[in-house]
Image (cartoon, rainbow, N blue to C red; front, top):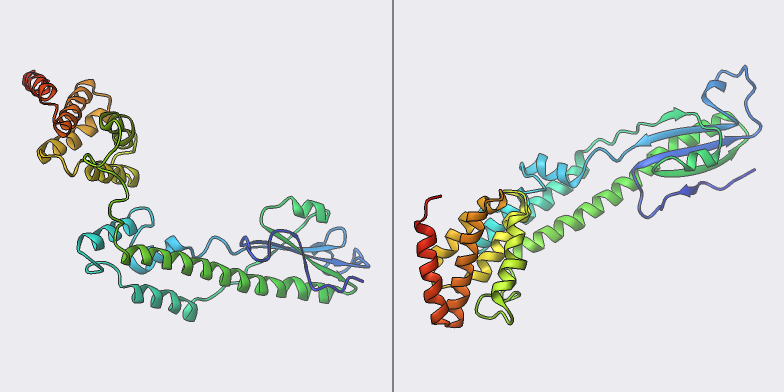
Length: 291
């Protein structure tokens, strides 16, 4: 008789998946006329539970604060930084208290349904954690095991899930509190190398190829504005940004306009007055043409 409490046939106890298959083996098997015979197959009593699709970090922020994980938190962090601190943003202590209070009131359901499989090997083909609860001589004890283990499993899974959520929230709060690093990337003045090629091949394509109004597009625009911050003509920077949607939609006229503005900025920075005068004339002629 196998007296071990349980053994993972698949999965990692330290990183539970949230989908559980729990198996108890009965030896000798039940007679065919036993009232519980329909619950078993080949001497195996198996239950399956899903505890994964319930409370997630995204659910936490959406339910508790009305924020989406995709955009809301990033915008909140940006707003806090623009205001010089946490004013207008989330109170970190409030976030931690909401997370803590979830544990006081949250009801943990324990759903698990009987399923039929031919063997332990067949069970290991299923997704999630597959746990063998051992061998039992009497049906009542096997049934007790498959009823009780999902409670223990869900308790450990919820604990791991909450711990991981807490780590992610603390990381987010650290980002909220800590200032944006200054001087981590060069700008138009400090860049060493071909600034024109860098803008046209590295910086601007991030704006062109990101979906409009996406997190990636917003980040790419911030990077561009940061690089162009020293430019003497901020109105040119605004014009370049305004041309991006047209470039994104394949308008060659807008791309040519943008390229000329980039070259003008670089020529000005290099104090290449001859090239700058030529570019100014080209821009004047270009901008005077219809459409």
